[in-house]
Amino acid sequence: MKIKFQAMGATQTNCYIVTIDNKDLIIDPGTNALGWIKKNVTNPVAILNTHGHYDHVWSNHEVKTAFNIPLYIPKDDEFMLTKSPLGNNVPPSKADYLINGDEKINIQGIDIQYRKFAGHTPGNSIIEIGDVWFSGDFLFQGSIGRWDFPFSSAEEMVKSLEKAMKIEGDFTVYPGHGMSTTLKQEQKIMSYWIETVKNS
Image (cartoon, rainbow, N blue to C red; front, side):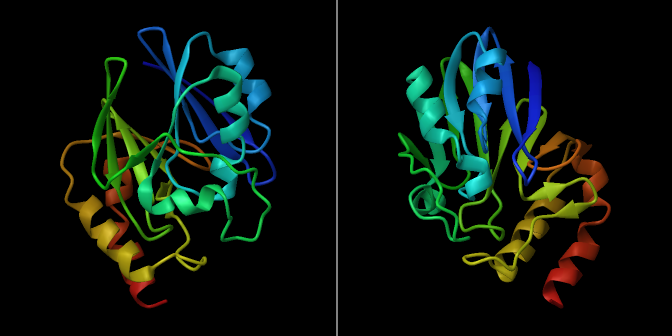
């Protein structure tokens, strides 16, 4: 597995290109991502969204059209593809596949596990490929995603953190913003975040 990433737009949202067996998966193509993607793919096969916020889906339609590839998003965030809850005029896009909860999919021989960790958004998920998590806005290095946006939920965030604390084994975590970390490292401070969210 080869991983390339570039921070996009004012929000510096990480767009990832994951290459396995000469096939490129594009994760969270944010603002003006198409140019960078074109320079860094040879055989794109799919777009994967971790969740529906505008800065993670902005270039969905452009990228999908340029390469004629399918788009996957958690079903509970599909509505955000045409109407941003944060008030941004996001270019609309249409999903080809809606992911239902903790769903395992296979794209051209590549096994991909979606794990739903709602709270930041209703369908917020991480994308697990092998021993790597692309965590979107659920986990960051030393932090977690916000739970005070429209359609966010503190209650669901607590449940998601409790779920993540119980996962055994370790994963390298590539977040939607900032630098990589590991699940074991972030599990050490999840109790703090659980209490912080509960008391917010």
